[in-house]
Amino acid sequence: MKKGLLTVAAVLLMGFLFIAAGVLTAADVSDDVQIENKGYKKDQKKPVKLTHKTHIEEHKVTCIECHHDYKDGKNIWKEGDPVAKCITCHDPLKKKGDVKKLKLAYHNNCKECHKTINKEGKKAPLKKCKECHGRK
Image (cartoon, rainbow, N blue to C red; front, side):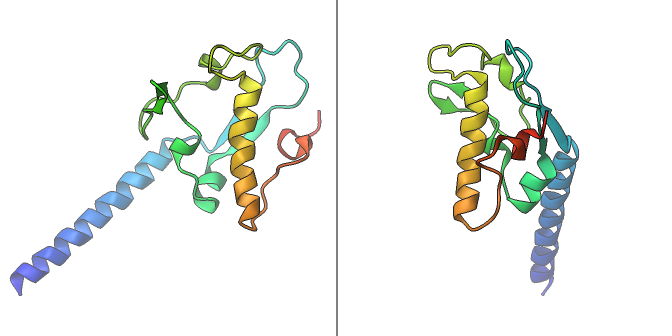
Protein backbone atom coordinates (compact mmCIF):
# COMPACT_ATOMS: atom_id res chain seq x y z
CA MET A 1 0.00 0.00 0.00
CA LYS A 2 2.75 2.43 0.99
CA LYS A 3 4.73 1.65 -2.20
CA GLY A 4 1.68 2.37 -4.38
CA LEU A 5 1.08 5.67 -2.61
CA LEU A 6 4.71 6.68 -3.15
CA THR A 7 4.45 5.80 -6.84
CA VAL A 8 1.31 7.93 -7.26
CA ALA A 9 2.95 10.83 -5.39
CA ALA A 10 6.08 10.56 -7.58
CA VAL A 11 4.00 10.55 -10.77
CA LEU A 12 1.99 13.57 -9.62
CA LEU A 13 5.16 15.44 -8.67
CA MET A 14 6.76 14.71 -12.05
CA GLY A 15 3.60 15.87 -13.82
CA PHE A 16 3.55 19.07 -11.81
CA LEU A 17 7.24 19.73 -12.59
CA PHE A 18 6.65 19.07 -16.28
CA ILE A 19 3.74 21.53 -16.40
CA ALA A 20 5.63 24.14 -14.36
CA ALA A 21 8.64 23.91 -16.70
CA GLY A 22 6.36 24.40 -19.71
CA VAL A 23 4.67 27.43 -18.17
CA LEU A 24 8.00 29.02 -17.22
CA THR A 25 9.45 28.37 -20.68
CA ALA A 26 6.37 29.86 -22.36
CA ALA A 27 6.58 32.89 -20.08
CA ASP A 28 10.03 33.69 -21.52
CA VAL A 29 8.62 33.96 -25.06
CA SER A 30 7.28 37.32 -26.15
CA ASP A 31 3.73 36.92 -27.43
CA ASP A 32 3.78 39.34 -30.36
CA VAL A 33 6.72 39.38 -32.72
CA GLN A 34 7.02 41.93 -35.49
CA ILE A 35 8.75 40.40 -38.52
CA GLU A 36 10.46 43.46 -39.93
CA ASN A 37 11.64 43.92 -43.50
CA LYS A 38 14.88 45.70 -42.61
CA GLY A 39 17.69 45.37 -45.12
CA TYR A 40 15.66 45.39 -48.30
CA LYS A 41 16.34 48.06 -50.93
CA LYS A 42 12.66 49.00 -50.80
CA ASP A 43 10.15 47.90 -48.17
CA GLN A 44 7.22 46.80 -50.33
CA LYS A 45 4.91 45.48 -47.62
CA LYS A 46 4.12 46.19 -43.99
CA PRO A 47 5.86 44.00 -41.41
CA VAL A 48 4.09 40.79 -40.38
CA LYS A 49 2.79 40.52 -36.83
CA LEU A 50 3.21 36.97 -35.55
CA THR A 51 1.51 35.88 -32.35
CA HIS A 52 3.34 33.09 -30.51
CA LYS A 53 0.34 32.31 -28.28
CA THR A 54 -1.95 31.62 -31.24
CA HIS A 55 0.63 29.44 -32.95
CA ILE A 56 1.54 27.48 -29.81
CA GLU A 57 -1.85 27.09 -28.13
CA GLU A 58 -4.33 26.99 -31.02
CA HIS A 59 -2.22 25.39 -33.75
CA LYS A 60 0.13 23.33 -31.54
CA VAL A 61 3.21 24.57 -33.41
CA THR A 62 6.44 23.66 -31.63
CA CYS A 63 9.38 26.07 -31.47
CA ILE A 64 11.59 23.89 -33.67
CA GLU A 65 9.09 24.13 -36.53
CA CYS A 66 10.19 27.74 -37.10
CA HIS A 67 13.52 28.15 -35.30
CA HIS A 68 16.61 26.44 -36.60
CA ASP A 69 20.39 26.31 -36.60
CA TYR A 70 21.74 24.04 -39.30
CA LYS A 71 25.08 22.28 -39.01
CA ASP A 72 26.03 19.77 -41.71
CA GLY A 73 22.46 19.82 -43.06
CA LYS A 74 20.87 18.95 -39.70
CA ASN A 75 18.86 21.27 -37.46
CA ILE A 76 20.69 21.23 -34.13
CA TRP A 77 18.59 24.00 -32.53
CA LYS A 78 16.61 22.86 -29.51
CA GLU A 79 14.09 24.56 -27.26
CA GLY A 80 15.86 26.82 -24.79
CA ASP A 81 18.71 27.67 -27.18
CA PRO A 82 19.13 31.35 -28.07
CA VAL A 83 17.03 32.48 -31.04
CA ALA A 84 19.03 34.36 -33.66
CA LYS A 85 17.29 36.88 -35.86
CA CYS A 86 16.59 35.39 -39.29
CA ILE A 87 18.64 38.12 -40.98
CA THR A 88 21.74 36.77 -39.18
CA CYS A 89 21.96 34.00 -41.79
CA HIS A 90 19.38 34.99 -44.43
CA ASP A 91 20.53 37.99 -46.46
CA PRO A 92 17.61 40.17 -47.65
CA LEU A 93 19.19 40.82 -51.05
CA LYS A 94 20.92 37.63 -52.19
CA LYS A 95 21.10 33.90 -51.67
CA LYS A 96 24.32 32.69 -50.02
CA GLY A 97 25.12 29.10 -50.97
CA ASP A 98 22.25 26.92 -49.77
CA VAL A 99 20.91 29.69 -47.50
CA LYS A 100 17.80 31.30 -49.02
CA LYS A 101 17.17 35.02 -49.24
CA LEU A 102 15.30 36.38 -46.23
CA LYS A 103 11.93 36.89 -47.93
CA LEU A 104 11.98 33.41 -49.44
CA ALA A 105 12.96 31.85 -46.10
CA TYR A 106 10.01 33.57 -44.37
CA HIS A 107 7.57 32.76 -47.12
CA ASN A 108 8.59 29.11 -47.48
CA ASN A 109 8.45 28.45 -43.75
CA CYS A 110 5.14 30.23 -43.13
CA LYS A 111 3.31 29.26 -46.32
CA GLU A 112 4.13 25.55 -46.11
CA CYS A 113 2.79 25.39 -42.56
CA HIS A 114 -0.30 27.41 -43.48
CA LYS A 115 -0.97 25.09 -46.46
CA THR A 116 -0.88 22.11 -44.10
CA ILE A 117 -3.26 23.80 -41.67
CA ASN A 118 -5.69 24.65 -44.48
CA LYS A 119 -5.60 21.04 -45.75
CA GLU A 120 -6.63 19.94 -42.24
CA GLY A 121 -9.76 22.10 -42.61
CA LYS A 122 -8.57 24.93 -40.36
CA LYS A 123 -8.13 28.49 -41.61
CA ALA A 124 -4.69 30.08 -41.94
CA PRO A 125 -3.89 33.07 -44.17
CA LEU A 126 -2.23 31.94 -47.36
CA LYS A 127 -3.01 33.60 -50.65
CA LYS A 128 -3.38 37.34 -50.18
CA CYS A 129 -0.38 39.39 -49.02
CA LYS A 130 -2.54 41.69 -46.88
CA GLU A 131 -3.77 38.76 -44.76
CA CYS A 132 -0.35 38.68 -43.08
CA HIS A 133 1.21 42.00 -44.02
CA GLY A 134 -1.80 44.26 -43.58
CA ARG A 135 -2.30 47.37 -45.68
CA LYS A 136 0.53 49.82 -46.19
